[in-house]
Amino acid sequence: MRRTVLVVLAFVAVLVVATTTVVLVRAVLVGNVPAPEPRVHITVDADRAARHLSGALRFRTIASADGTANKAEFMRLQDYLVATYPLTHARLVRETINGASLLYEWKGKDRGNAPIVLMGHIDVVPVGPGSESRWTRPPYAGAISDGFVYGRGALDDKSAVIAILDAVEQLLQERFSPSRTIYLAFGADEEVGGEHGAGEIVRLLQERGVGEPAMVLDEGGALIAGQVPGVAGPAAMIGIAEKGYLTLALSAEGPSGHSSTPLVPTQIGRVSAAIARLETHPFPGRLEAPALEMLRAITPGQPFGRRLVLANLWLFGPLVTQQMLSSPDLATIVRTTTAPTIFNAGDTENVLPAKARAIVNFQILTGDSIETVVARVKKTIADPAIEVQPLPVAFATDPSPVSDVSGSAFAVLAKTARQTLGETSPLIVPFLTGPTDSRYWSKANVRNVFRFTPFLYERDWMSRAHGTDERISVQAFADGVRFYLQLIRNADAL
Image (cartoon, rainbow, N blue to C red; front, side):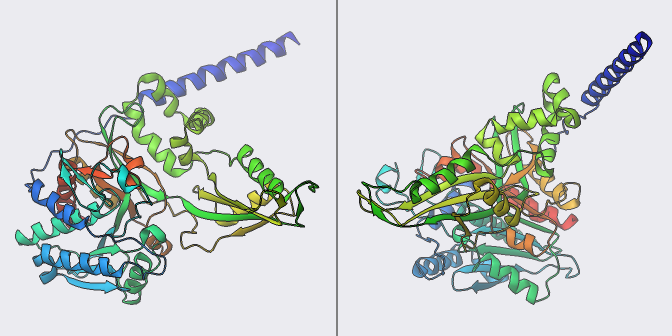
């Protein structure tokens, strides 16, 4: 017996030593921080570019699900773009899609090369009733003040549209001609699903036999500084996949009655209990490919202790996942999120309502699907009296495939960001985004779909994008124009 114990202890000791050795070696050999890319000097008139964006922000191009509202504003914006970018509208082929969205074709010298698609959207979310008074500058004035351009759409997403058009116009002035065809695709209904804009553009190009693009670039990530743990300098967050989207209606119906003689459970109580079970039994966290790529990118620059953990996710993955789940900003990267957003029931204080209904939104993690989410929700609620019904919204979609970070398209994006953005060369960080118009390209099985808006965002940008005092700095906007200028040049090498 003693001999057996000694053998087991020896085996355990060897296993511990071997594991420790592997962990330490992996931490040491994890790699180095990429060398800075040589900066490319590109002259951009920052003040003129800011004025162009300012002008575009003055149009109340508010999206509508059927594409009919505010048509006059979209038409006025189109006239503004024609006047502002004369060479673009003289040399490129422009089409209006479903009356408001725009598709431009810049024909390349070699039609055998796969095209690239640069995306953005010209619609904006409305400023809520009574909210305009809380803005320090009027939301539709396009004010330029203290180094910023203010207005609805300054971040989401007219800034990308105008930066792309500024870059194209300048390249045309410089007599540049691309080797591959470039499509500019600007949807007018992204904020309500994109079906009549980006969705129609993708269908139209497929019907015309346009081959698979070498690269599709839409909004998504951005340049941030001081917001990635362990990364002191700027980080270019490039979306390589996006979460799926689903909204479910949970409802219960039964007899109505007087509040003095309630039947338990009431319909409100039944639906409330269902919501409580969903919140106390959230989807489990796990490290899927987008999160793994993100962690791999930031590992080399981490302090040794943190690097040791991140370089050995085969061992510490569950620990890292739990740490990420403790932060709402990081939890969304490792789980399907559950968010009750609307509750409807009753209209009289002493009458039991016959029906209660709650709306719950889910952002679906890579590896899950609409089908698996619905099945888990029903199992978690475990109440056959609760009807679970997906809402027929245009946003409903499974998670996108994960784009290749080892291919030439991602390499061109990374190189361009390092050449043009930030005071120092940014760290390139792949990550997972929420839904964008680019999902229509993912549904069409296009492989190289990326999501990146090339502007340095302030720390509070998320509260501004659909909130009060949406703005972008003049300098950040000019850098974004430089990015698109260089990206179009670099795309020739794809």
